Image (cartoon, rainbow, N blue to C red; front, side, top):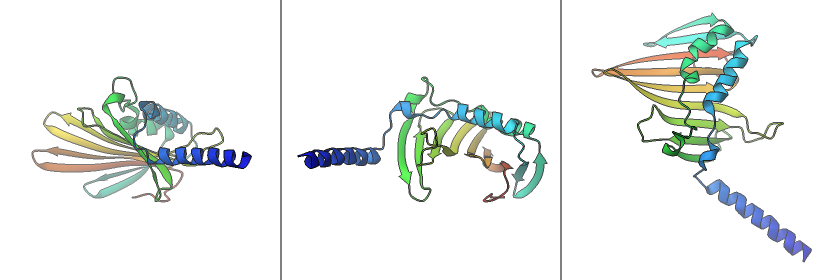
Length: 195
């Protein structure tokens, strides 16, 4: 009887876990405070002893220069001023899906909207193994941001890779002409960087 009860409990828990993995919708409470996270990271970088480089690419020509840690906030302004989609005013306008990505070996949470908000998409990639505090560390954050500046449509693809770098690719379109610029700030070396 005890074996039967233990097997039943195990199967019930296992089935519950499988159902959770198949579920694509996550309650609104599962939003991540991306803006707060990035501001916290910027505060750490402001006092970091790491070596920082700024790589700017305009029309296919790249320029790499060393920068001070105190300059990082200026280049990360687009991240620090992101609208908080987890706020009560915005969160109900976003659809939430999540999945485990075998290639990334990570959980990916995707927030998308068709509403007229600047942030059209926000992806948060989490390490599947909990840290010492029992939380899953953020590996990366991707944001697709759309803005209108007069008659110019501006799309920014923004990527923050925890502990490595951040980059903002800006594509502006006016009168049928596109202009692209990429800004990347790197610290802790250039390994894996797309220069």
